[in-house]
Length: 356
Image (tube, rainbow, N blue to C red; front, side, top):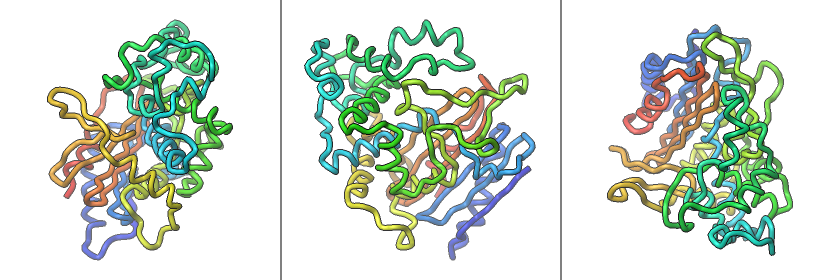
């Protein structure tokens, strides 16, 4: 139940070496469906494996739920809108969402940059999210909390900290960013993302809604029953993107400069946005050891800095990462058994940080 492809293979023989590396890494992950993929400035090696019987569509061509690994897409969208002059990082979200409406002074100070960089002072999720989510936590926790409710929760919020002073990971904040950009541009988030990011990068197998039957990866519960497709409700910008591993490589290659001269020309505002999202903007943690860009976690490695983001839904997982200095990109996706502990993220992260 293994399908390994490598195309193109470089003249130095890195393709076969990467194929062996990915096959070895796959043995460390117990997943029904698993895809590990690397690109070295456009030279790709893709390994598909898993404990489940393969279906009629190759695992590398299925579309997987990205969960929080959707956030780099939101970050690139914001950066491109800024490059186009349509919004500014310092724009205040409440002024764009509800101009003139009375809000808490701290909410009034929250900017688009604060929302994206998890420095808004907002909690991970709205306080009133949990009563409706807990009874359906293992089936559909987000679907009952629509967009208008997310916006209302933001406008009546009382941030825990003064915006810009502390880092706290927040799906709530990034979701508010999505609604704010939609309001500022007069364009629905899904359409905006497609126009500004997905279409220019030719990500034809990337979307925010389930596609035709047989094209989507499916997670399973421990008893073997399938997990329903994710409904993110009003939290679309924070976790609704779904994509094939091949599209994820294309997305990452745009950040590393690949696939080179054979690729389509990049619009100047998109090129500026790709450069902007790779730039460190804040440090946090003990001795400020943790570095972040607008949207990526940034860690050191023996081969230069690595930028990455992971995500998970009830039945699926994703990992995206790249090394700007060497042009290496790693995309990994998997289906999983609900609540099962596994080594997926650690394995993908090791491929990014330890691969020569």
